[in-house]
Length: 276
Image (cartoon, rainbow, N blue to C red; front, top):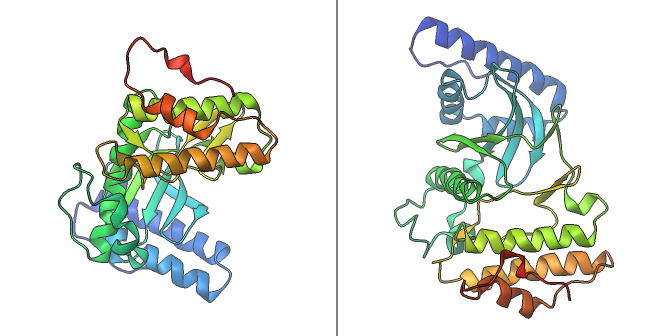
Protein backbone atom coordinates (compact mmCIF):
# COMPACT_ATOMS: atom_id res chain seq x y z
CA UNK A 1 0.00 0.00 0.00
CA UNK A 2 1.21 3.54 -0.69
CA UNK A 3 2.63 4.89 2.58
CA UNK A 4 2.17 8.59 2.03
CA UNK A 5 -0.42 11.12 3.09
CA UNK A 6 -0.91 14.84 2.80
CA UNK A 7 -1.02 16.82 6.05
CA UNK A 8 -4.62 17.85 6.56
CA UNK A 9 -7.16 17.47 9.31
CA UNK A 10 -6.85 14.26 11.28
CA UNK A 11 -10.41 13.09 10.63
CA UNK A 12 -10.05 13.50 6.89
CA UNK A 13 -6.79 11.60 6.83
CA UNK A 14 -8.17 8.68 8.83
CA UNK A 15 -11.13 8.37 6.49
CA UNK A 16 -8.90 8.14 3.46
CA UNK A 17 -6.47 5.81 5.24
CA UNK A 18 -9.30 3.36 5.81
CA UNK A 19 -10.30 3.67 2.14
CA UNK A 20 -6.72 3.01 1.01
CA UNK A 21 -6.56 -0.05 3.27
CA UNK A 22 -9.73 -1.41 1.68
CA UNK A 23 -8.20 -0.92 -1.78
CA UNK A 24 -4.97 -2.61 -0.72
CA UNK A 25 -6.80 -5.56 0.84
CA UNK A 26 -8.96 -5.92 -2.26
CA UNK A 27 -5.82 -5.71 -4.41
CA UNK A 28 -4.39 -8.84 -2.78
CA UNK A 29 -7.56 -10.77 -3.54
CA UNK A 30 -8.35 -9.53 -7.07
CA UNK A 31 -4.90 -9.12 -8.58
CA UNK A 32 -3.55 -12.62 -8.96
CA UNK A 33 -0.31 -12.04 -10.83
CA UNK A 34 2.55 -9.57 -10.96
CA UNK A 35 1.45 -8.02 -14.25
CA UNK A 36 -1.97 -7.09 -12.81
CA UNK A 37 -0.34 -5.70 -9.67
CA UNK A 38 1.94 -3.56 -11.80
CA UNK A 39 -1.04 -2.07 -13.66
CA UNK A 40 -2.81 -1.39 -10.37
CA UNK A 41 0.22 0.49 -9.03
CA UNK A 42 0.29 2.58 -12.20
CA UNK A 43 -3.32 3.59 -11.60
CA UNK A 44 -2.76 4.48 -7.98
CA UNK A 45 0.38 6.52 -8.36
CA UNK A 46 1.08 9.30 -5.90
CA UNK A 47 -0.90 12.05 -7.62
CA UNK A 48 -3.84 9.80 -8.47
CA UNK A 49 -3.99 8.60 -4.87
CA UNK A 50 -4.09 12.21 -3.68
CA UNK A 51 -6.84 12.95 -6.21
CA UNK A 52 -8.89 10.08 -4.81
CA UNK A 53 -8.20 11.40 -1.31
CA UNK A 54 -9.56 14.83 -2.26
CA UNK A 55 -12.64 13.34 -3.93
CA UNK A 56 -13.28 11.15 -0.89
CA UNK A 57 -13.11 14.20 1.36
CA UNK A 58 -15.65 15.95 -0.86
CA UNK A 59 -18.05 13.05 -0.38
CA UNK A 60 -17.84 11.88 -4.00
CA UNK A 61 -17.37 8.33 -2.71
CA UNK A 62 -16.74 6.54 0.57
CA UNK A 63 -14.79 3.52 -0.65
CA UNK A 64 -13.94 1.56 -3.76
CA UNK A 65 -14.71 -2.03 -4.60
CA UNK A 66 -13.20 -3.97 -7.49
CA UNK A 67 -12.60 -3.16 -11.14
CA UNK A 68 -15.71 -3.38 -13.33
CA UNK A 69 -14.06 -2.37 -16.59
CA UNK A 70 -10.44 -2.31 -17.66
CA UNK A 71 -8.95 -0.96 -20.87
CA UNK A 72 -5.67 0.30 -22.25
CA UNK A 73 -6.47 3.92 -21.40
CA UNK A 74 -8.69 3.77 -18.32
CA UNK A 75 -10.07 1.59 -15.55
CA UNK A 76 -13.51 1.86 -13.98
CA UNK A 77 -14.09 0.93 -10.33
CA UNK A 78 -17.31 0.35 -8.47
CA UNK A 79 -17.50 3.04 -5.81
CA UNK A 80 -19.98 3.48 -2.98
CA UNK A 81 -20.97 6.78 -1.34
CA UNK A 82 -21.81 7.44 2.30
CA UNK A 83 -25.46 7.24 1.24
CA UNK A 84 -24.81 3.71 -0.13
CA UNK A 85 -25.27 4.92 -3.71
CA UNK A 86 -23.20 3.16 -6.36
CA UNK A 87 -20.97 5.34 -8.53
CA UNK A 88 -18.57 4.58 -11.34
CA UNK A 89 -15.05 5.85 -10.65
CA UNK A 90 -13.15 6.11 -13.93
CA UNK A 91 -9.40 6.57 -13.69
CA UNK A 92 -7.52 7.52 -16.83
CA UNK A 93 -4.09 5.89 -16.87
CA UNK A 94 -1.37 8.50 -17.13
CA UNK A 95 1.06 5.88 -18.44
CA UNK A 96 -1.19 5.19 -21.44
CA UNK A 97 -2.07 8.75 -22.38
CA UNK A 98 -0.55 9.13 -25.83
CA UNK A 99 -1.52 12.51 -27.28
CA UNK A 100 -0.89 11.34 -30.84
CA UNK A 101 -3.66 8.74 -30.54
CA UNK A 102 -6.13 11.28 -29.20
CA UNK A 103 -5.14 14.40 -31.13
CA UNK A 104 -7.84 14.01 -33.81
CA UNK A 105 -10.54 14.16 -31.11
CA UNK A 106 -9.14 17.36 -29.55
CA UNK A 107 -7.51 19.51 -32.22
CA UNK A 108 -10.22 21.62 -33.80
CA UNK A 109 -12.69 21.30 -30.92
CA UNK A 110 -13.18 24.91 -29.77
CA UNK A 111 -13.97 23.80 -26.23
CA UNK A 112 -10.45 22.45 -25.66
CA UNK A 113 -8.02 24.78 -27.35
CA UNK A 114 -5.48 24.89 -24.51
CA UNK A 115 -3.69 21.77 -23.40
CA UNK A 116 -0.31 20.24 -22.76
CA UNK A 117 0.93 17.11 -24.48
CA UNK A 118 2.61 15.38 -21.54
CA UNK A 119 0.97 12.10 -20.54
CA UNK A 120 -0.54 13.24 -17.24
CA UNK A 121 -1.98 16.40 -18.78
CA UNK A 122 -3.54 14.31 -21.56
CA UNK A 123 -5.13 11.95 -19.00
CA UNK A 124 -6.51 14.92 -17.06
CA UNK A 125 -7.76 16.55 -20.28
CA UNK A 126 -9.60 13.36 -21.18
CA UNK A 127 -11.32 13.20 -17.78
CA UNK A 128 -12.41 16.82 -18.18
CA UNK A 129 -13.47 16.22 -21.78
CA UNK A 130 -15.60 13.20 -20.94
CA UNK A 131 -17.23 15.05 -18.04
CA UNK A 132 -18.01 18.03 -20.29
CA UNK A 133 -19.45 15.78 -23.00
CA UNK A 134 -21.58 13.84 -20.51
CA UNK A 135 -22.88 17.07 -19.00
CA UNK A 136 -23.80 18.43 -22.43
CA UNK A 137 -25.54 15.20 -23.42
CA UNK A 138 -27.30 14.79 -20.07
CA UNK A 139 -28.57 18.38 -20.06
CA UNK A 140 -29.90 17.86 -23.60
CA UNK A 141 -32.03 14.97 -22.37
CA UNK A 142 -29.91 12.06 -23.62
CA UNK A 143 -29.87 8.89 -21.55
CA UNK A 144 -26.24 8.74 -20.53
CA UNK A 145 -24.53 8.17 -17.17
CA UNK A 146 -25.26 11.22 -15.04
CA UNK A 147 -21.97 13.08 -14.54
CA UNK A 148 -20.93 13.63 -10.95
CA UNK A 149 -17.56 15.35 -10.61
CA UNK A 150 -14.07 15.18 -12.09
CA UNK A 151 -10.68 16.02 -10.65
CA UNK A 152 -7.30 15.42 -12.23
CA UNK A 153 -7.44 12.13 -14.13
CA UNK A 154 -10.47 10.81 -12.22
CA UNK A 155 -14.11 11.06 -13.30
CA UNK A 156 -17.05 10.02 -11.12
CA UNK A 157 -20.46 9.36 -12.64
CA UNK A 158 -23.63 7.33 -12.30
CA UNK A 159 -23.07 3.58 -12.07
CA UNK A 160 -25.15 1.87 -14.75
CA UNK A 161 -25.99 -1.55 -13.35
CA UNK A 162 -27.26 -3.25 -10.25
CA UNK A 163 -25.46 -4.18 -7.02
CA UNK A 164 -22.04 -3.54 -8.48
CA UNK A 165 -22.67 -5.53 -11.65
CA UNK A 166 -22.53 -3.32 -14.76
CA UNK A 167 -25.36 -3.53 -17.26
CA UNK A 168 -24.78 -5.67 -20.35
CA UNK A 169 -23.74 -4.01 -23.57
CA UNK A 170 -25.69 -4.28 -26.80
CA UNK A 171 -23.05 -6.70 -28.06
CA UNK A 172 -23.97 -9.15 -25.30
CA UNK A 173 -27.78 -9.17 -25.45
CA UNK A 174 -30.68 -9.76 -27.80
CA UNK A 175 -31.65 -6.64 -29.74
CA UNK A 176 -34.72 -5.57 -31.66
CA UNK A 177 -35.77 -3.12 -34.35
CA UNK A 178 -36.98 -0.89 -31.55
CA UNK A 179 -33.44 -0.82 -30.14
CA UNK A 180 -32.10 0.21 -33.54
CA UNK A 181 -34.60 3.06 -33.82
CA UNK A 182 -33.81 4.17 -30.26
CA UNK A 183 -30.08 4.28 -30.96
CA UNK A 184 -30.65 6.11 -34.25
CA UNK A 185 -32.80 8.69 -32.48
CA UNK A 186 -30.14 9.08 -29.79
CA UNK A 187 -27.48 9.82 -32.44
CA UNK A 188 -29.76 12.45 -33.92
CA UNK A 189 -30.64 13.98 -30.56
CA UNK A 190 -26.97 14.07 -29.61
CA UNK A 191 -26.21 15.96 -32.82
CA UNK A 192 -29.23 18.28 -32.83
CA UNK A 193 -29.68 19.10 -29.15
CA UNK A 194 -26.36 18.41 -27.44
CA UNK A 195 -24.34 19.55 -30.49
CA UNK A 196 -22.07 16.53 -30.15
CA UNK A 197 -20.97 13.52 -32.14
CA UNK A 198 -19.97 10.48 -30.11
CA UNK A 199 -17.14 9.63 -32.55
CA UNK A 200 -16.60 6.13 -31.13
CA UNK A 201 -20.08 4.67 -31.07
CA UNK A 202 -20.56 0.92 -31.39
CA UNK A 203 -22.35 -1.98 -29.73
CA UNK A 204 -19.58 -2.00 -27.11
CA UNK A 205 -20.37 1.40 -25.60
CA UNK A 206 -24.14 1.20 -25.42
CA UNK A 207 -25.73 -0.35 -22.36
CA UNK A 208 -29.08 -2.10 -22.39
CA UNK A 209 -30.47 -1.98 -18.86
CA UNK A 210 -33.66 -4.01 -19.00
CA UNK A 211 -35.29 -2.28 -22.00
CA UNK A 212 -33.47 1.04 -21.64
CA UNK A 213 -30.74 2.10 -24.09
CA UNK A 214 -27.89 4.10 -22.52
CA UNK A 215 -24.93 5.56 -24.42
CA UNK A 216 -21.62 5.81 -22.57
CA UNK A 217 -17.86 6.24 -23.01
CA UNK A 218 -17.89 9.86 -24.18
CA UNK A 219 -14.17 10.63 -24.01
CA UNK A 220 -13.84 10.81 -27.79
CA UNK A 221 -17.02 12.82 -28.40
CA UNK A 222 -16.51 16.09 -30.27
CA UNK A 223 -18.39 19.31 -30.78
CA UNK A 224 -20.37 19.60 -34.01
CA UNK A 225 -17.99 22.49 -34.77
CA UNK A 226 -15.08 20.06 -35.02
CA UNK A 227 -13.68 19.88 -38.58
CA UNK A 228 -14.01 16.07 -38.66
CA UNK A 229 -17.59 16.04 -37.39
CA UNK A 230 -19.12 14.52 -40.51
CA UNK A 231 -16.43 11.86 -40.78
CA UNK A 232 -17.00 10.79 -37.17
CA UNK A 233 -20.78 10.90 -37.54
CA UNK A 234 -20.69 8.74 -40.68
CA UNK A 235 -18.52 6.22 -38.86
CA UNK A 236 -20.92 6.07 -35.91
CA UNK A 237 -23.86 5.50 -38.23
CA UNK A 238 -21.98 2.82 -40.16
CA UNK A 239 -20.93 0.99 -36.98
CA UNK A 240 -24.49 0.89 -35.68
CA UNK A 241 -25.94 -0.12 -39.04
CA UNK A 242 -23.43 -2.93 -39.45
CA UNK A 243 -24.13 -4.29 -35.97
CA UNK A 244 -27.89 -4.42 -36.38
CA UNK A 245 -27.63 -5.83 -39.91
CA UNK A 246 -25.51 -8.68 -38.55
CA UNK A 247 -28.31 -9.34 -36.07
CA UNK A 248 -30.78 -9.64 -38.94
CA UNK A 249 -32.51 -6.31 -38.40
CA UNK A 250 -33.49 -4.04 -41.29
CA UNK A 251 -31.88 -0.63 -41.05
CA UNK A 252 -32.34 2.74 -42.70
CA UNK A 253 -29.84 3.27 -45.56
CA UNK A 254 -26.85 5.05 -44.06
CA UNK A 255 -26.92 8.06 -46.39
CA UNK A 256 -30.61 8.56 -45.68
CA UNK A 257 -30.07 8.35 -41.93
CA UNK A 258 -27.18 10.82 -42.13
CA UNK A 259 -29.37 13.21 -44.07
CA UNK A 260 -32.13 12.93 -41.48
CA UNK A 261 -29.68 13.61 -38.68
CA UNK A 262 -27.96 16.61 -40.22
CA UNK A 263 -30.62 18.44 -42.20
CA UNK A 264 -31.57 21.84 -40.95
CA UNK A 265 -34.40 21.98 -38.47
CA UNK A 266 -37.54 23.33 -40.09
CA UNK A 267 -40.97 21.88 -39.55
CA UNK A 268 -39.49 18.42 -39.17
CA UNK A 269 -40.43 16.31 -36.21
CA UNK A 270 -37.88 14.51 -34.10
CA UNK A 271 -39.72 11.40 -35.14
CA UNK A 272 -38.37 11.77 -38.68
CA UNK A 273 -36.07 8.78 -38.24
CA UNK A 274 -37.89 6.38 -40.50
CA UNK A 275 -37.67 2.70 -41.17
CA UNK A 276 -36.14 1.58 -44.43
